[in-house]
Image (cartoon, rainbow, N blue to C red; front, side):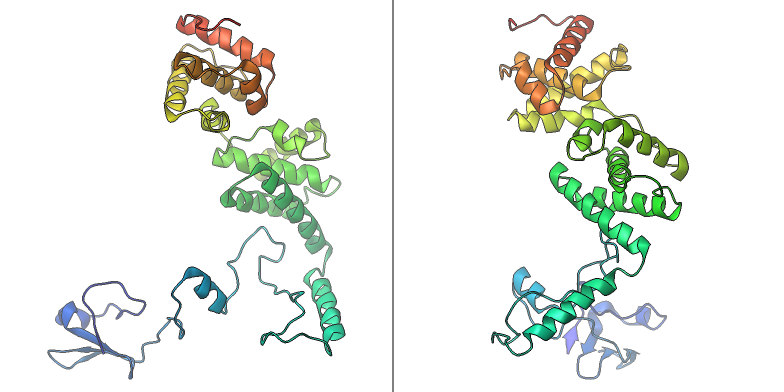
Length: 316
């Protein structure tokens, strides 16, 4: 028997009028009968309790994962939502013995299992598109929640027939850009275009189509979102990030940021903050990391120091 002392366990008595009559520290759990019993009155508070814990023990995360008999969570980044199973290509059975006699049978089962996962043109479209999504997301180092949102947006586009007559790559690239804009993950359209075979103009057209047809509203890109990424890539300290953020907040109040490329503004702010803090970086280095040209960094740099009255501390 186990005495409940207020800690959270996997099995707790359900809330009922009887529970309040007995102090929590007087309730015990009888594992043999599956009952919650009060020590003072002997009253059975709840019976036939199902123990949802595993019947095996695990002392490390690796051991818990190895012994678990459930699959991964449901995910929209797979065309079948992660429900399907797969037959491993290992040539050994569960006991470690090499499979020889049924090797041909397993190959045939593996082939038919792969065929049955895709049964319609929609499944085929989703499988191809989500593979492309995974490739782009890996190259852009996107977090999981952005990948899930991009997959959700593409599924909505398929349901509305927006993919018909258009390239799968262009629509999935546009969905990735929409998801990045929604999650405020600093990825520019030029960066996404670099990892696809589709022209930037076509991706931008699909991007506007998704916003219009799916009713998605995204906020304007904030240049401050690009600052941590640029600073970390240049190996700058957290103080530089703070100072660059303050610089952009000041010039925003003066109206300098209106109509300017967010990445270029962030690059110029980081460049100025690095100069004033003594952690000098060249305009070429900053421009390369930010994905803009040196001319853009130089122009934004001059506009910011003119607006704030900052004296130039480094000769070009």
